[in-house]
Length: 257
Image: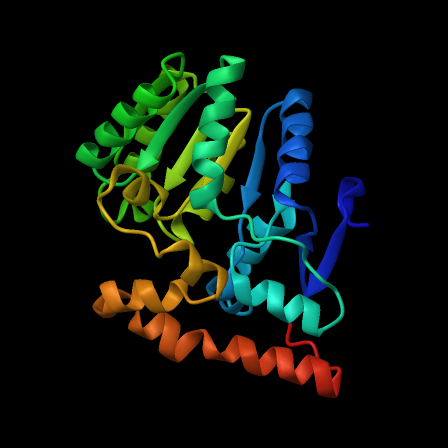
């Protein structure tokens, strides 16, 4: 068991919650009912690699309410190391599920990130699928927002005025996680979740990998083929270290902290 009684495993020095999707949704609902400031992180290979060198990112993870596995390679590694994570739980899959749940419970949502046009298309689709959904607003921070104190203050004020129950942040890693960590004590929100490219997928701005590629652990290859200029270094230079670390832990018992 991990903190707060969570069922957790430790993979390459990172504690990860070990729940099937539906069980996690139930646990998250229970946590949200207890109060505000709940936030979820969804580690993939890129996150694990970043955590080795980014102290601020490690603190975000250490304080997270839930840590659920986004990447299929994490499932493979956990099973190979005899720890077995049961299921992939991605931000892109959580976004529509939690939005539907918000519509059922009367909770309001806020979209933070992507472009204004993408957010508007997301909202239009949500309202078409869930007529009762309450959208408190949306905001698209400019490039470099994380380095500008005035912009960070603007985000806080925007959320305070909107008063959402749930904030979905689609700003990319590690920006969205670090911003959520900052916001959680500044704004009285029940749940913060970083969802990566979920708005782009949901709006149709970008095509998500077919389900069979996702299941095969090849969503990264699909994304690399569609965005080589942005993603080549992540997938071809940085992330391969993860696989060496897994082999090292398996055969040498060495955990790369």
